[in-house]
Amino acid sequence: MADSAQAQKLVYLVTGGCGFLGEHVVRMLLQREPRLGELRVFDLHLGPWLEELKTGPVRVTAIQGDVTQAHEVAAAVAGAHVVIHTAGLVDVFGRASPKTIHEVNVQGTRNVIEACVQNGTRFLVYTSSMEVVGPNTKGHPFYRGNEDTPYEAVHRHPYPCSKALAEWLVLEANGRKVCGGLPLVTCALRPTGIYGEGHQIMRDFYRQGLRLGGRLFRAIPASVEHGRVYVGNVAWMHVLAARELEQRAALMGGQVYFCYDGSPYKSYEDFNMEFLGPCGLRLVGARPLVPYWLLVFLAALNVLLQWLLRPLLLYAPLLNPYTLAVANTTFTVSTDKAQRHFGYEPLFSWEDSRTRTILWVQATGGSAQ
Ligand SMILES: NC(=O)C1=CN([C@@H]2O[C@H](COP(=O)(O)OP(=O)(O)OC[C@H]3O[C@@H](n4cnc5c(N)ncnc54)[C@H](O)[C@@H]3O)[C@@H](O)[C@H]2O)C=CC1
Ligand SMILES: C[C@@H](CO)CCC[C@@H](C)[C@H]1CC[C@H]2[C@@H]3[C@H](O)CC4=CC(=O)CC[C@]4(C)[C@H]3CC[C@]12C
Image (cartoon, rainbow, N blue to C red; front, side, top):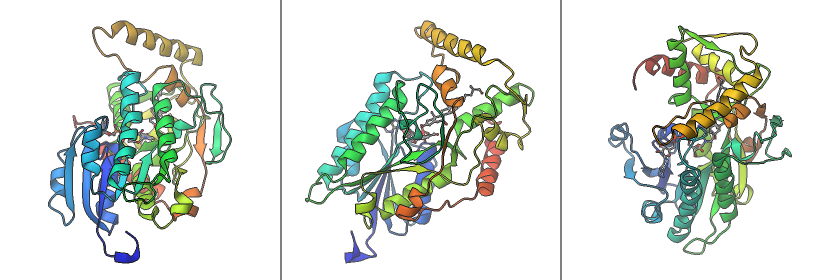
């Protein structure tokens, strides 16, 4: 697709294109990818908002499908130049079984790779996660780390296990000959905790705060820092990476990139208050109001309750030993690898990202949407 035709229009496929991140990737491609000729949006559940996109100048094709079904993925990939594979089962709360998480995240990714190989699709960008690195089960801090920082990555939970395995598959596939004989070029992007318009957990915290009379209670020390990244910048990074993969195949192929922007390093709760504060909530307590040992106990109790209640109902609260460990461990990234390799600069400043998120929480937080 190189210089033979600068004006050649490209077919992009976004898997998981109706999810929180996927929708932003889809909209970003339509706004910022001049070579886009057709955009295929593949998802298990198609969003009604796709309809309005179908009236624009670029052909938008909605494909309801399941990444675990190889034939459905193959049909969607046929004829695509670039695949952005963002579909995944994001579950750290025990809603889905480990088997299902593995099937979607690992087998689904395998199906995407094989479909690229069979169909001669050469460019694949995979949405990985910071979770493939850590936090590890020992709670070691990862402080301002980059892609080369040594860290003891130990995965036990099904979600990070599945993301690590899927990322490995994607990177290992780099250089494989696709149908037609040319090499596949792949890279993986590792977002930290994503926030922005559409962030379900943010909305849940907002609603919880409203129920508690406009208050949230500090549970995690303010000194535990998290790296967070705005969804618009994560989407922009995907679009740029996909665009540059061909020209910079030797440099970018088989590489991983953390997703980063100018969002401040703060504790998970203090960071959320950047948005929930202006929406009228306040975080009570300069220090955690419950002792850590009690949180550990409650997290363990939640696991027991989940197990006991499983025959009757799905009990999947936010607090469990894994989420507590993640929330309570510093994990921040500081890197310029994406800037050096493919010229990434955040599209949205921290101020813009903050304002957009606040407006979204205000607009939808109290409603049933
Ligand atoms: N939300 C976060 O903070 C982070 C997310 N990620 C990764 O980003 C990607 C997108 O995550 P989010 O947008 O947050 O999640 P999401 O749940 O909003 O989006 C995932 C999308 O994948 C679709 N999907 C799930 N199973 C599927 C299947 N079997 N076949 C086809 N589509 C399927 C869902 O319907 C959904 O639209 C995931 O791969 C996740 O692992 C990585 C780092 C952080
Ligand atoms: C102990 C509670 C007191 O208020 C707070 C619980 C917060 C947790 C639900 C979140 C804290 C950190 C989040 C994770 C982190 O942002 C990294 C992630 C990366 C992903 O790829 C998927 C989502 C997540 C695991 C994210 C999930 C929610 C938290 C554990």
